[in-house]
Length: 256
View 1 (cartoon, rainbow, N blue to C red):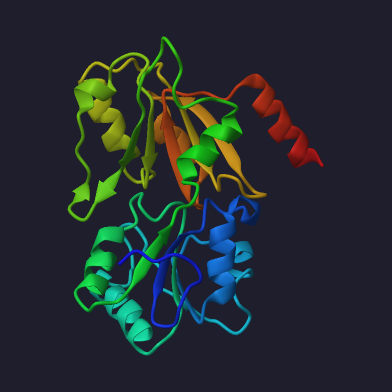
View 2: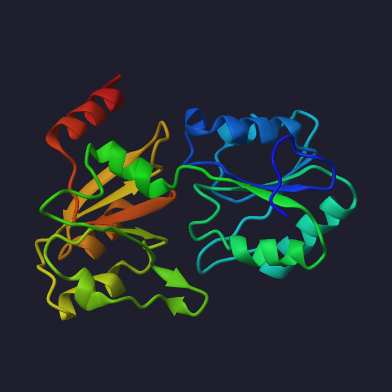
């Protein structure tokens, strides 16, 4: 049931809103937002991106908060289905990329069960934007031949992973929803042999005007997070530190 453009009445487009900077939206994402009758968006979608929606579109917040209040997934599914069956052109706007920790499959299954057409418009995930802000590469010849995108918690609480593999020197991982799980992550990694001096960088509000990069080590991670009072959406980059040039550029932007 994957559809091509344009977005038709009674169809749903799962659109990646990217990490927050509206200039990082794809042309397909912009076109879908301009055509939408209803935009059902995540909590982390930036106001600047929402402002690009069809001025006559109904904007509906279906946000979730880790370990906090959230719209139930069944209710979100029902909301999407209801508007699509009423003939609306629906954009389900997800922060970052729809297929990265976005419960995309559950929402597609709900549409398939009712014969509703849908398509996916991918977006830039926050890990990509965060690493770009560091002036780094997610993979590097001779260091790591792969990178892990992982979550700090899931529906059952703190998420478990292959800690022994992650603890190896040179491993790189982007940890989403990891702020509250920082001490758990630190403990599991060090228990499996990770070097306490492993570089870790937390990037808050990646790609946005108020982006903040906090460089630390695995040993100091929980204490630094507590001291810095990180409130915005953040990704933890295990094994990466900002280049000096990237830090200088950030400082110049703050001064200006």
